[in-house]
Amino acid sequence: MIMPSPHHVIVATDENFAMPTSVALRSLLLHGGGPFAISVLHNGISLDAIDNIIASLPDRDFTISWHDMSDFSVGASAFSHLPDAACFRLHVADLVPASTSRVVYLDGDVLVRRDLSHLFTVDLEGAVFGAVRSVNFPSIATRGAVDGWRELGLDPRSHYFNSGVLVVDTDEWRNTNVKAKAIDYLLSGRCGPCLDQEALNVTTSEQWFALEPTFNQQTPLLDDQHGAHLLYPASVIEAARTDPHIVHFQDRPKPWHKGCTHPWQDEWLAVAAGTRFTDHADLPQRGLRSELHWRTRRAASALIKGR
Image (cartoon, rainbow, N blue to C red; front, side, top):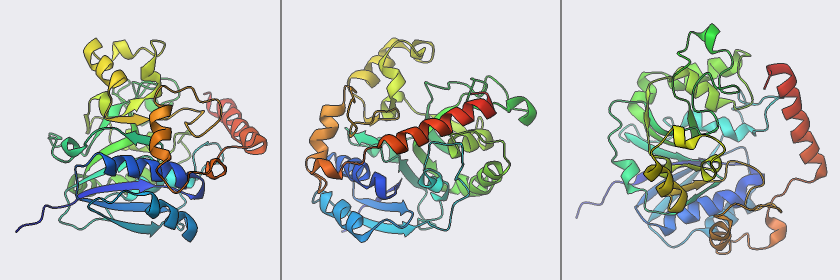
């Protein structure tokens, strides 16, 4: 009997995001589509956090491996609200066998609601990866997306994607040298607070395949104030709003923070209740000091970068 090849999924996390990561992975496994080979990229999280994530996962057909990326810190920015782990996705093609041609990357603040088998078979039409167009920053020249697009010679009309869900053709990723080009951009001093998302948009402009928004339901898609109706037909927006494959809690407050009113919070909490992190004390929330620190960095970015 020939065993099916595993579907490779990569996530990146740190100690503060261990709980949400466990929810993302638990929700993935609960909806089938495996077997899965899961790689977790981290920056030296504790053994307790690793044990708790593993204990949170349902009894499904999967393997899980752990990769300490502590030595990779080029993505750190004094003017970004994102942690170092946000840039670990640049290594998506380095951590799988050479025979693996497709990898799905998921941010830790997602909720999988449907079988994702389609993402492992969708025709990317020769693109480096598939992604969903950003609702916040629909085009390269949108203020705050790539502010230096003129100097970089980019087409201002080029679409800009959200990097929370990526369907990667690993051969194309390697052949086009995406990781090295993105790192060069991160080190160039041009990059804004979105770090590798901006770097990837710059280095792969017009080389990515547009997935439907149901595979990355971004929070701004939920209202009519961000112009989603200018990007997609009404039927596509309705499907993504009412029955998405993946919910991406990209904005604050997150579903594990006080004050969250996101319409999919209850479903996220229901999955979270099945994890090892069931004690509310285990849910990482920013205290006053960290909240002020985050807001100060964003204000500094606005002052320096004009955002």
